[in-house]
Image (cartoon, rainbow, N blue to C red; front, side, top):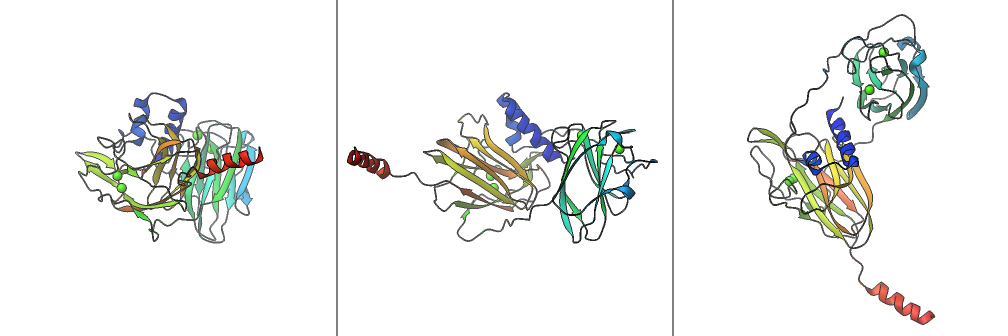
Length: 348
Ligand SMILES: [Ca+2]
Ligand SMILES: [Ca+2]
Ligand SMILES: [Ca+2]
Ligand SMILES: [Ca+2]
C-alpha cells in the first residue's frame, strides 16, 4: 500500500470529523510523525489452485479507460494478494487481462466496491508488479503501474482474508506528466535551499515561530510561483520544507490552485487562523511530475496555500515545484456600485 495515500485519507477523515486541533496539526507539520508498523511488502508468487477464473481465462480489456462491475463470490480462489493478508487468504478472485500496444502506465481502482477488496497486478507472466489492500477506506487502488507494450498484464480483483462481494473496477491511463520547470515571468519563492539543520523562518507558516507567510498579490492573469522543497534532518529528526503562501479576497471568488511538483506533493488551501488551528478548504496529494489542483469557491477572507513534499525523508532539497493560482482577481473599485445607483435613479 502507498503510505502517503493512506495517511492522506486518514487526514481527510480526521478533518471531516472535526476533531481537536491536537489531532490535526501533525498532518501539516514539517517534522515526520513516528513511524508506524506496516504490513510486509514481500512479494509471494501466486498460489494457483484448480478451477475458477484464472490468467488463462481472464476477461480481456481492449481499450482504456475500462470500467466493469461484478461479484467475486461465485468465483474460486486462485491468487493470493500478499499485500493484503498475512497467512492463508482464501478470498475468491476475478482476473482481467490487458496487453498495451505501447509502453505506458495505468491506475487501477476498486473504489466503489462494496466489500474489503484487494487488487494485485502481474506481468509478464506470474511476476507481481503491484498490490494494494486499502486505499479508499477498505477498497483498493494501485497507481502508476508501468506497463511495457506487447506484454500481457493480469489484474486480479480479490478480497481481504475470505471477503467477497460486489466490485467495481476502473482501469485508466496515468495522467500526462506536468513540467515543474519555471515559466518566464513567474514569481520566485526566494527561500534558501533547505539542508540538514535548516530552520525555516522564511515561509514556514504554522511550522515557524512566529508563523510566517509569503504574501501573494492579486493578478487578473493569474499568479505563477516557482519554488523549491525537499526533506532534511534536524537534530536527528526527519523534516520537510513546508511553504505557506497567503492571500486575501474581499468578495467570494472561484479559486483554482494547481501545483506541478517534481516530487510527490501535498497541497492545501487553509483558512487563516492566528492560532494555527488548521481548517482546510481543500487538500490533495500528487505523485511526482503529476499536476494536482484544488478548485473551491472561497468566501471573503484571508487564506493560506500550503505546499510541501508528501514525504518526510528521501527528497533532495532544491527539488522544484511550480504552482498557479487562478481567480485571485483584484478588488473592484467602487465605480460599479456608484454607476448602478445612478442607473437606478435614471430609470426610477
Ligand atoms: Ca484470492
Ligand atoms: Ca482491502
Ligand atoms: Ca521552499
Ligand atoms: Ca519553506
